[in-house]
Length: 69
Image (cartoon, one colour):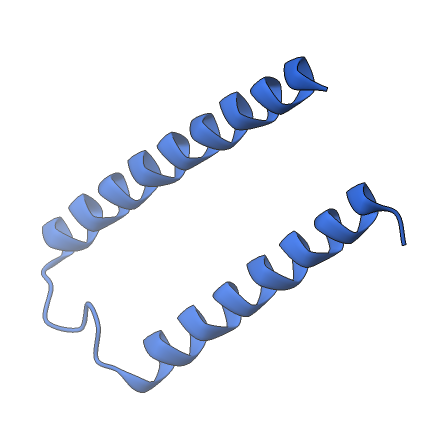
């Protein structure tokens, strides 16, 4: 396997395992069960904000990597 393909596959496996762990944790805990609807909306807002930040970081890292190549 070439280096780029291997890295891509490894990142996909990592993302999948992270998703499965989150599902397990959420399924076995009572996370968010005590929140009011307003609290749930606020949690969603912060989660969306974190995801946008992470996507931005990933995009910038990818651009830096492409410039370095």
